[in-house]
Length: 281
Image 1 (cartoon, rainbow, N blue to C red):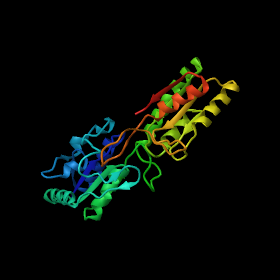
Image 2 (tube, helix red, strand yellow):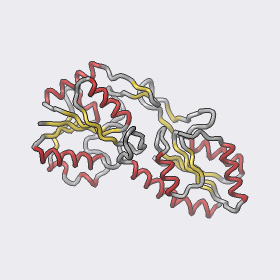
Image 3 (tube, one colour):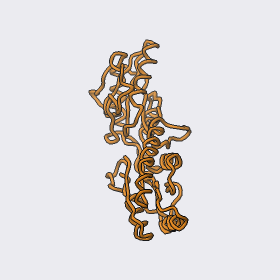
């Protein structure tokens, strides 16, 4: 038996650990493992891959990134924006099937987030046996309690807030921390609560900037002269506005970003308090 594995989408902590675990389990079963480079693109003829065994994966668990490489672009994009699905062209899938058949790969392990697993589902529906491993710091995979990568992302937010607390208190500032998560607020919620943020703004709950400023003035009047605000990159204003850094063509996700600066500017104008913005990721 020979199986394939690939990483797709953004990188996050734990990718090499998954590869190590798959190779270890396969070795015990007497199976061979083919690692495709740069996501699904590695399956296009003639195939860009490497054979994986215990010798090639020893020590990789402690390494960041992925030894196979990854991409969130290319010929296999199956998700466009928030909740919109695009069909991977059948001719592309057939080319991938040809490569798998040539390499005698009987099943494919896809390590990825919602977009990558959407692609994996389409490959499965077209006859390729697929197992999905939920990988995303956003923790937004349906029917999955916690994806790997999420815990590390939350820890990074908590660490940043720990450092920002002292600066905010010393200078009596408002500090707005923009965090990743796309259209899911898990990182902002968990990180903000664990890190002691005073205001948390989530994509799932549209917010009013004037109400945020009002809450900060109320804190100031009560003697709390510093405020930490955590805002998810996909947080929306009540009018539904979503800030993006870049529209990524007809295919792929919008590149979110800029909501932290927008919130900080409004807070400073509305409250008169010195306000700074920081962005993680």
